[in-house]
Image (cartoon, rainbow, N blue to C red; front, side, top):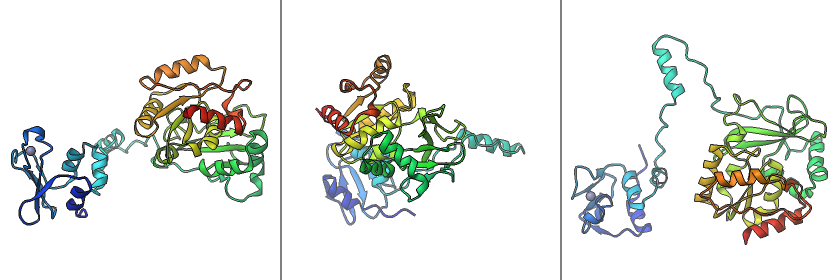
Length: 335
Ligand SMILES: [Zn+2]
């Protein structure tokens, strides 16, 4: 049983013109009729018994408030569900579930699912924020090799939930968990902290990840709840993004990365969604040598009018900017 929706409060807070019409009943303009309703033909029962339009009682009616709220506000069904306090309907069965059901009906074993439903970080990964003397080389990497101040490194460890490992396939790597906007783990990317590793970044194989990194963006959970978002900066790698965000977050400049120099269709959708909902500006900040990639990605992102900031003279990698240079660049992007 759903909690009763408070129609009176809703009508009041949304400044809906409502007239009383008998006990526990009000009438409002019918949003389904629109201009065809000359006055107030939509009748709403305040005790949750339903709503009905007297111009079209056969089609404009319902019991649950969601559909009417959605129409009145012109919002999405998800927003209306949130406002009316109803849970989202269960998702339609996936093709995997359908195949499994079919297999069961035929008396066969269901095939193994192709993607894990939930992903957790391996036990060999340790949070950088936790006191552990074995984490020393990773702090050293951030402060001495990458040039972060100690306070910036601590902020990054916390904000990006950085992890480290000294055993297993990700040994001596700084690990960036990659999460969706709700904070669920999709995959991770692990940066070698030593100079000798063949692979700079290492990610789990695609069949282990819920979403491979090149099909998502770093820091989506932050990007969706960042206070006062102003500029979304697209970079190539995680350490480019962290360099910008650590200096820019306080000004509303937040960076993410594409995990390479290609923009996937999924990444494009995520960026357009963030731009529409939150970030009035989007900038593309790649290495100075990546001119052709910059043009190609900017073209892929039309209709956005991307800002294409220039790195300061003498530097060709956003990840290697000093804190002062990064802050200066963020200020320029705000203009
Ligand atoms: Zn109507």
